[in-house]
Length: 238
Image (spheres, rainbow, N blue to C red):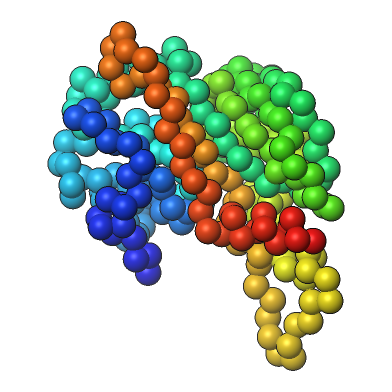
C-alpha cells in the first residue's frame, strides 16, 4: 500500500501561491483516478484544496513536476499556456544504448486510439528536442524537451529512435539489473535478483510558465527521486 498522504504532499510542494501549486510527484501514483482503489494525486490535493484541478498529466510511473490550479481562472490561464505551447517542459530519461543526440528535434506524428499509441502518418504532429547528457556502458542519460503534449510522447519518440527508456517494457525498454552494472556481483543461492530500477526511468525535471498574466515566467525544478539518483550513482561508479 502506498504510504504517500497529504502530509507527504505538503512536503513535496515545490512552488505555491494563491493560484497554483507545483509538486514533485513520486513514482507509482496516478495523476488522476485510474479505476483502482489506489490513491491519486488529484484526490490527495483536493483534501487540502477542494476546488483544485490538475493542469496536465504524468504517467503513473513517471516522477517529477506536476502543476495544479487552485481556482477556475488560474486553470484556464495555465491551460491557455499549454495550448499555445508556452509552457516549457524538461524531462530526464535513462535509455538503453549509446545515444548521441545533440539537441535535435524528433518530429514524428503520434496516433492515439484507445490504449494504442504509435508512430503513424495519420497521427497528430509531435515534436521533442533531445540532448544526450551522459553515456554509460550500455545506457545513456538524455534530456527531452517536448514541444507538443501527446500521450507517451517522450517514451515513444525515444523508443522509435532506437533508444527505449529503461524498464519501459511497453515500448521495448527492458528492466535493468544490478548484475549488469556491478562488477563481481554474486547472487546468493535461492535469491531472486531485484531490478536496479523497476519503473519507467523517466522524470519530469522542470516546468517553466507564467503564474501571472503579463508577468515573468518562473521555472520550477523537481529534484530527481531516490531511485533515479541511486541508478545514476551506480552507473557512474561502474
